[in-house]
Length: 634
Ligand code: DON
Image (tube, rainbow, N blue to C red):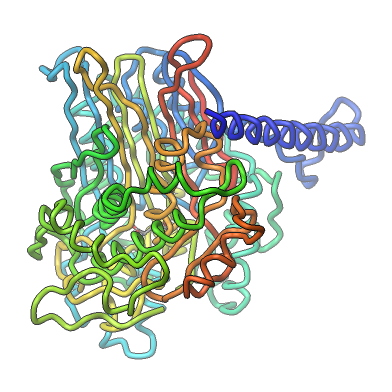
């Protein structure tokens, strides 16, 4: 209770700080306008960025938390029209394709986790049912296990930039399949907000400017030939390197893509005009994806990974997400070693994390990432003993290895498939992902994470239709023994093969809890972007809400830690709360033999939870303040 009060106080302070920011930004806006009689700014003058809307809010009936305010509003618009959570998630995702072009879009792929309790046409178990849809990109038929290795020195670059990096996109098929299976509205209705946004364009915010200018522009400067090769990206998305927050981005061509999708469905993308434009674009840049690859694409139904944690039921994404398994293993490890007791009994400053808890969490992540590295791949191609990997018996054995006063040898984390060589080590980071959480007025929920992989994906745009193609091929083990862009070491189980899907860290997760009537109700909907940090970010936000009683704003806003087993480094975000005997967490962890550093970036989490307030039960929805998103709802 005291801790909850502390969280609320911190949150209030955050609101005050945000409000101060709003005032400062509004004054900036007044200033800009005062130079122009009538308030009209000349086309060449960037408008002051709009004040950031509140990153967390309470809602009575329904809520959408996306990582861009306009995308959340697109979803809320659909919910206000009577749509369900799936209709809203689809509308939000199409809107994100416009306003978060560096994160996701129709040239990418994703995972959707659905909790359905009520539907006007489907016979749904009123106790609630979970569904999962895997619309991750697939490997083109011409790419086999040694395709990249044969490129020699150019292998890593080819898997990350340009046409050879592009996996067959899954987002359009995935969204339309979800809409047909579990939605209630037609394509035109859910696409309307995205069509409007594409026609209007949107204003670049701070997160956009960071991805475009701080992160991507230096790559263009190091490779000046890209300015011609990826001319659309350089001109439209970076304004030839001059872009600043507040500039308007024009991607009106994407409206034509959406209109074709609204008219002809997935066929427009996979066998129609859009598909032809994709193949032409990829071929021109030396890629190998064909019309047959696109025509063969189909999303895959998946069985959600479900487990009990802290008296609730958690559902998350199964492989080829590694995120679900890693979130499950981490939470189960914490339960097994009695994290709740540790939190309640060891002293630290109010609202801080106990060093013992930080140590437990770190060790949980190390085991989970070690198993991720060695066991996982596309379940359609490799055999994964998933049930065993998340069984209590298996977790109990690893909990028994836990040492309160130190760490283990790297090789002692996780387990090895018999007869398979362990992968070696490394780490960097990025922005090509977006997570959205939705709850509707009927008791349904959607957690959906989508990605084009690195910021602005492969940088290759389908110019006629104004969208970017992913560089998801880098999520495969493209060169054996070498880590991918996120420093993740992966085994041969994740080698590319025709039609195969690369391993992903995306971890859309829904927690439900049975009430006194025995009926499950949505408690938390969460997920994140941020490469390998998706897993640790999602887990910590859920723990903050469930074990620490934080509000949603606080659960996603608090500084976090990250450890991915290899490299053997513990990242502690600056401002990480909690000291004990005058020592902060970094010092404590060093005492326990962890190598500690401050991360360059952290994941972005969107979380909605059911809370009891003075006005009864409400939805507390939060978008991660680090990316500038804001929830919407009613
Ligand atoms: O699926 C994955 O795990 C990666 N493609 C995710 C990339 C990502 O999150 C980039 N950053 N925000």
